[in-house]
Length: 433
Ligand SMILES: *Cc1c(COP(=O)(O)O)cnc(C)c1O
Image 1: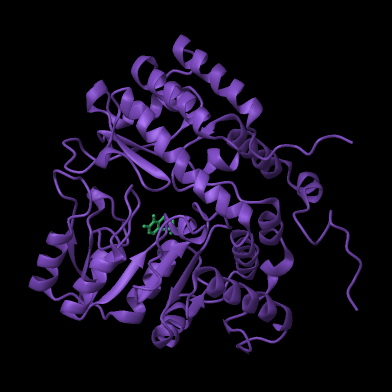
Image 2 (image 1 turned 135 degrees about the vertical axis):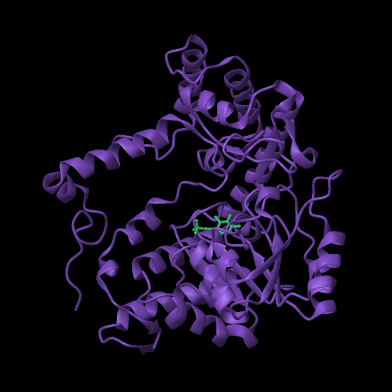
């Protein structure tokens, strides 16, 4: 017998209770929603997850200890969470056509720690993309565990094409004989050649690891090629284009399944966040719908138009454009630094981030570029026509604007942002009646 469901109390986010008990935090939840609603959200790693996912994440599953895996736990009372995790695993395997899935990593970085744990020992050589060419901290950057505990060797992009230099990857692989080769990153606008990387890995006997944190949503939506048939292991986040709850996951070949599971728990983590696992299950089911596939295609179409439109205004896209959800832009043509562009946009209600461009002459905290992504605006229903308007607004804010929100141009652009958002709201209130 289950108890009666009152959707406003214990089964989902009980906002009234929070408001009553802790108005300070409740107020910040409201003002953050307001912030998300009133700006143009162009951070390429962000998205707006569904109310269904938010309900799962705000549930009493947060209370449950479930160290271990379904039907083999270290705690009693796991009957219901076992079913939740079984569903999440089944759905992940189906969505990605994978042999094995682990849905427990708390985040993308946690998933990556588990990948190192499964396939390498401290001191091993790992070959990955350098951070300043678009990689990630966890790919051997010196301040990360990965740079401290492993011998990281880095490839970058080709100076002319600005795309991954596979010849360099191959040469470094032959020279250093890495245990593992990683591809994927945070600022790579182009498709990755998985077939070529597989061949390089086979040539030197390395594990092929794809960190698909950024683009896995486009794979889920079947609009770009999947790394799953090629890679030994694919790690990813669930909160970027994929549009699920904040978290990580790993899919791999059957032969590596046990190693990955042991590396996630008990090597790297304790109890899984079962509310997060439930949110991932909800999201994986959403991703198998035609609506999500249409969304993923729109994300790519929008990113392409946004990149081109900015390029036409002298804000050059690195590699000449994009095949994915993001583009990286060189601001030197308009004579503005990344840090200034970010501040000017912010003052005008446009949220994006400064980003180093390959071979950047500026320090990382200044940077010559900005990174923009289409996932959030596409979730809000925008299309290519709106992307042209967004490009105009970014260009105006960057070239004529100011970090002061009271500046006339900041205010004018902000008013146009607000006007655009009235037609494409984030988290729209349900129509009355
Ligand atoms: C975002 C990202 C991560 C880390 O994800 P977190 O959830 O922030 O830990 C790892 N790798 C790549 C390539 C990423 O883009």
